[in-house]
Length: 71
Image (tube, rainbow, N blue to C red):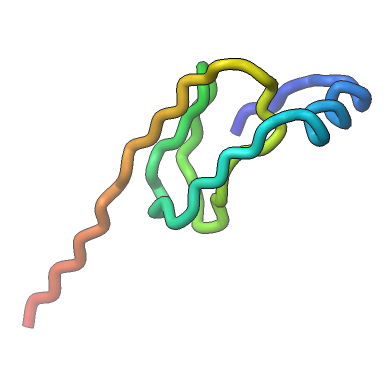
């Protein structure tokens, strides 16, 4: 996970004026990214908040889980 150093004022401004991208039901282990940042998501991932105004490149890669049972 990446961290970004911003001031308290910038964080408050992004919280009120920034965008929120909701992405539900992305399987754990999938990749999600916005601009130059990417993450491998876990079970609790629901999206990204505090996105600054402007045009952004959002990308993802699903991980398909297949379960095979042998009897």
